[in-house]
Amino acid sequence: MQTSSLSARRVRRLQTVSDAHLRALAELLIDCVEGGASVSFMHPLPLSRAMAFWREVAEGVARGERALLVAEDDAGIVGTVQLVLAQPDNQPHRADLSKMLVLRRARCQGWGEALLQAAEQMARDRGKSLLVLDTASESAERLYARLGWQRAGVIPGYALLPQGGLCATTFFYRELEPLPGA
Image 1 (spheres, rainbow, N blue to C red):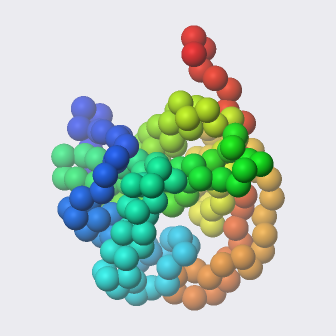
Image 2: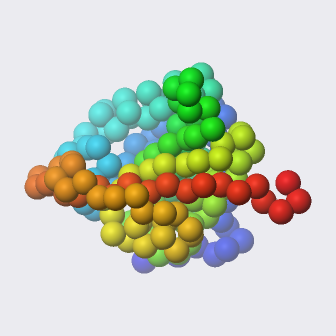
Image 3: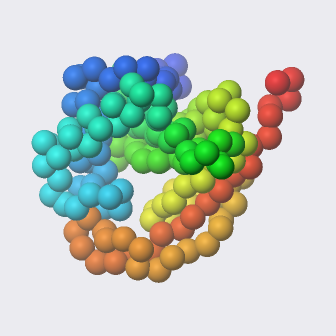
């Protein structure tokens, strides 16, 4: 198993998404789907379908509707998360946290926490006071709860697992407080 040193960790926002980013993000998505993550796609996920998804995300980034964060080590992108900033007129104070993905080789090394904290700070910086998300992952549920997210409820049979079979989805929210000194 490949590990990353703390000095090699980076989480940054992509203002533009290059072809190299698209390829790395597509490979990340495929890795997660192959590993059983219920993230809107079925297994096997063709590279062309994964690339098309990330192109759509890149278009949303270019329009300012989404913020795309990536986590990187010396080998490249190991994780990502999105903030869906474009909300209805009556919900300008909120954003959706979407598609938090971490390569299987990089899990349990703090990447999810780093991505989540960076996304929360970005939301604060954008004037958001409420974040919402959904997950079908028990390990992600533990992370969200540990970092102060509130469980809102579970919907059974909400989605399919990548290899088939229904799974429940848990919804979380987090009210953001301004950081001290902000």
